[in-house]
Structures are given as structure tokens and as C-alpha cells.
Image (cartoon, rainbow, N blue to C red; front, side):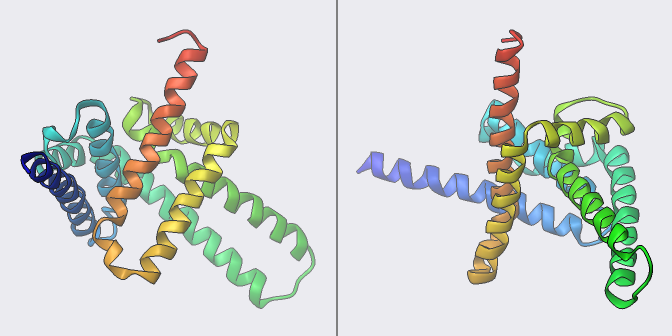
Length: 202
């Protein structure tokens, strides 16, 4: 009886942590320009959970990471916004106008879009796992994505699957962001451990 109750409360505690983290992330994303700092803070929290357990808490950890990583993640967010705008404008041109060299532009857009997507997949992991200058953070994210394509595709698949699940069951949005971050960072953490073992670092 007591074991069953303890198990129930443990599950409830885990769910509460995911719910609180997800709500903090959503609320801090509302200004739009804070999406990158908020998402970085969320990944930093799940990284801390994986290394130290959920007992460390959520609320205080989130805002501590939000503050400490704000400048770098905010600047990267502005860079990402610029590239999104470039992709959007070029896509509008390709879809609405016929011109010489259209095929070349389409190929360029596809390559640039994939590069952008792959880098985005790893950028938050690199932000919270390494202390690197801005440019090195971006290039390291791209190098990780290209050198570990199976994991990159898996991480993208998890994101797409969660979006589909949220569409089918909107209630999933209550924990979707934090749960995805936890699963994705768990995969990244396993990848880092394999890299360290291969290099004899652990």
C-alpha cells in the first residue's frame, strides 16, 4: 500500500516538474524575442536534471539559467530571426516568380535550409554544454549535426512526432516542450559519453 502511494507521488512529482518547466518556458517565450533565452534555459534545466536529479528544483534553476545565458542566446536568436527572414523572402520569390537561374536558387535554398535546420537541432545543446564564443557555438552545432547524422535525424523525428501528437491531442502541449527537451538532451548526453569514451576521456 505504502509502496504504491510512494510510486504515485513520485510520478506526480515528475509530472509536476515537467509541467512547471513547460509553463515557465511558454510564458517566457511570449515576448517572442525571448524564445531563444527561454529555450536555452529549459535545456539547461533538463541537463541539470540528468546530472543531479529533479530534486534540485525547477523554478529557481530556470530563471538562474535564463539570466546567465541571456546575452549569448538572445544574440543567436536575432541571428536566427535574420536567417528565417532571408529563407522566407527567398521562398516567396521562388514560388511567385519565374526567372533565369531559378533552379540554382532552389538548390541553394534547400541546402541552406537543411544547414539551418541541422544547426538549430544542436544549437541549444552546445549553448548549455560548452562555454564557447558566439561564432564557435554556431559552428560547433553545425559540425555536431553533420558528423552525427543518425542522431540529427532522430532528434528531428522526435520534434516532428511531438508536433503531430500535439495536433492530435492538444492537451499534450502542457508538457510537450519540456518532455521533448528532456528526451533530446538525454540522446545528446549519451552521444557525448560515447565520444568521451572513444577519446579515452572517461
